[in-house]
Length: 352
Image 1 (cartoon, rainbow, N blue to C red):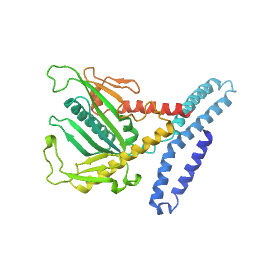
Image 2: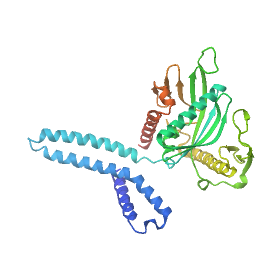
Image 3: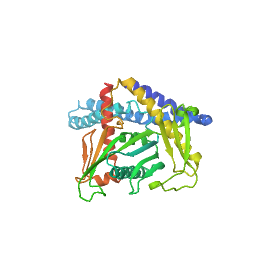
Image 4: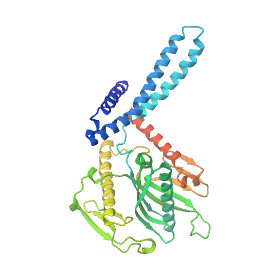
């Protein structure tokens, strides 16, 4: 590990020197790529510098222990430096894990009502609100692509983009089946019902990231509509794209322009095709083995929201929080942090 860290430090110093050259920005694309590499290396280099400082403090304290008058003080200094070294060693191991190349990307989120009729649609709306509030807290921008309401205010389907650096690194753990247990607004007898909604989170890809043959795409245009099929747009600005080889269908109706809706559809289609290719690659590399946490399969139940008991349970890490109102208001960091930590631990175990 130390040899690798030395090599990364050398590369970081090289990049710092290059960035100070007068002609560094002559090629903007190359400059942006090198700056990104430098920024990615910086946390590793700074942590390694702290690690070496802890080693140096240990050595100096050990040498001074030979002096009887300094022994007690140096023993305490040595113990503190040793503990710091161990903590930094663990941090370095995590920083050196292979990064998901999509972690810095924005995301496309799809929410669908599942089992439970109108109640599942109302729960899907609650999930949409939860992610919208989380995005706002993180300073990210949310853009609707496709939003199909029910007459009672539920959501049959909601497709939206959350734009922000690192959005995928945080939200990728949300893919899967979310289950709710509560008394539906439509239930007069006060009985608790169980319903589900599915969430899919994809890294937002550009058309240039994925090869798409224009001949494979069938484009349909239609009028954007609201709850109950009521038209909210008199022109056929909504766009639906069908990828004939895979049968994937994407739609966008939130923009006024047909061109803008098509551009959003193409980004969504690129993301879906990328996900298919990555799934095939992952299965080949891992021999069908999936990580303990991972990003979740769409048909896997990952979390339960129990309103009568006021609790939220994430089944992948056996985490239960008794503050469901805060979670539904977008306070997701404790859950996401636990999932990220478990994911790192699993990767460390597999790397050994």
